[in-house]
Amino acid sequence: MGSVFGGGGGGGIDTKQASYSKIMTDALRTQIRLMPEVLAAERRFQPSFTDLNISQLNQALGGLTGVYEGIQPRLSQLQSRIAEQNIAQQQAQLPGFVQQYRQAAGTADILSGLQTRAQEQLAAGSSLTPEEERIAQQQARGAYASRGMGATNRAIGAEILNQYGLGQERMMQRQAYAQNVANQLEASGVPQYYQTAYQPMTFQTLSGMGQQAGGIAAGRQFQPESQMAADITAANLNAQAQMAAAKTAAQGGVMGGLLSAGGMLGAAAII
Figure 1 (cartoon, rainbow, N blue to C red):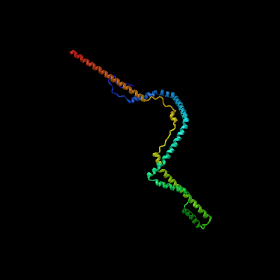
Figure 2: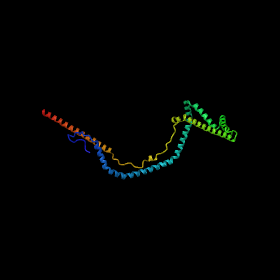
Figure 3: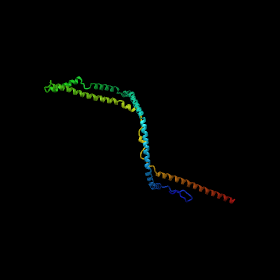
Figure 4: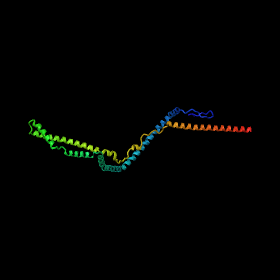
């Protein structure tokens, strides 16, 4: 690439600027010219780099496997201890936190009453109150009495079945009620505990062996970037600019010395 500095006119600096287009065009043409050699080098050395990476990967995976086998029992014991400590932490903190949360929210007494009622409902199961039994009996007896069969065995059986069906219906209602209360109790403080107070201890096991060992496929080993050409060009331009400036300064100094000497000689001749 030619210099951007003129050689004539006493070594003055040319005002013509370096062309970005020319620099990049020259770099691209240089890469195109060298590309067959680059491709030949890639074909020659790429398989060797790939084989080397595979060998290193096998070695790394084998070493990590040995590490796992050696420390796995201790890791399992450590994880078990951490799990036990987390459970103990929850057992110690959760009840008090939830109770304080309910009291602060003003729902402690309401939830306590609902819990007691749900427990009673579950304990009742399919049993009927005296009033419910009387209603079931009257429904069956009335239906068969209207047909003139009030005292028959079929009427008695229908009465029993009616009571049983009503009992099952009551039991499902009680279970649904208890489940609804349980959901309310779980939602009244437990999520807030896990979001704000509970910080479980965790343990990160050894993982990512493939990432630790590195990739199998080798990347490009030869990369003549255009940035290299730009850096070389900039260095050359900087050096040329310094040389031109030094040359100009030197010439100016010589001319000034000659003028000074000529003046002194002229003065001496006059004297």
